[in-house]
Amino acid sequence: MKNIKRLIQCAILLALATATPVHATQYTWINTSGTSDWFDAGNWSPSSVPPTGSDDVFIGNLGYSGTAVIASGTAYSGSAVIGGNNDGAVIIDHARWDVSGTGGINIGAYDANVQSSLIINDGMVQASRLVLAAGVSASGLLEIGGQGQGQIVDGNGNALAVQSGQGRGTILFTHSGTANFANQVVGSGSGAASSSNIDLQQSGPGTTILSGSAGIVVDNITVSAGNLLVENHAGAVGSVEVRQGLLGGHGVIASLGTIHIYSGAHLSTTLKVVGTLVLEDGAWLDYAENSPLSFLYSDSVTVGVSLTGLVTVDFSKSQLVAGNDYVIIDFLNATTPSADLGGQFIANGVEGAFSIENNQLVFHATAVPEPSGWLLLGIGLTVIGLTRLHRGART
Image (cartoon, rainbow, N blue to C red):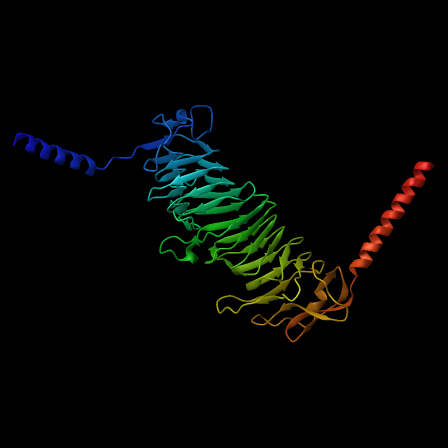
């Protein structure tokens, strides 16, 4: 009888022990070992590397600043705060960070004067949520660098939405390869995209493809280098500015402000536009055959084109036929262009003339260089140059 009682007591104690939750340890990045290695125990308080996904981590908090680098293998944590009361950054460099806590990753939690960054150089981050500039006065940076192979996914491996917090956030593409960014950008508060406090910037020499099925809506979009390709739709509550590089793709680009193409910058005619398109003197339109630039109707913004000088239409990637007409811009759903608008466009790579016909900007091709002609000319010039060089050497 006593043995039976003891067995029952042991069973109850075992049940209580297994039912009692194990409190996760909170790890603070103190960056005191002289390295930036995530896996260096001396950089953490308590002095050990966060071992499992149940332990929350704080980088840039409680008086400690620094950058944690995950350069190999897989790092684990529960929820994560990057940049609390102090500067903080996490760099993923050809590695992986699994964040399994329900709080996900918060970049920029409190202070507006704090630099908070998550930089992914050809690695992967897996989390349940990612909030950029979470605090009211905070700022936060999400950067895709390296060759552009950084990924942000949920537990099922799908592209994770980037959620806008109450501060100011930036998604920055600095990579030199090709990045496929399929992530949605979700606004703060009720989740309405129009409340997004995030700017999207393409500043690296690579190509960024915005391919998410839900598209993105941010505050401002800026291209200062490389190529930004919109394959679904991308909208800006503020403005879209292309200072250098190319804005292209086969989707829709929209702005409640203006879509401004600066001198030397390029816009592909494959896009559909919602808003006022401003083409500066010296801007380029890259023509794709049978794909004229077109507009979609909007009852909330003015849709049309404003020119400040001469715009070059580049035909170098299209095979035009002399004597044919080509539609460059279709002004359906836009303000009616002036009859003399065609005089503000010049052609690159072919000869012909522009005119406005049936609410369209049309190019009449009159002389198109044959590819074989250009090849023979190039060979001839090369031979002449080598001959002169050889004669000079003999002299």
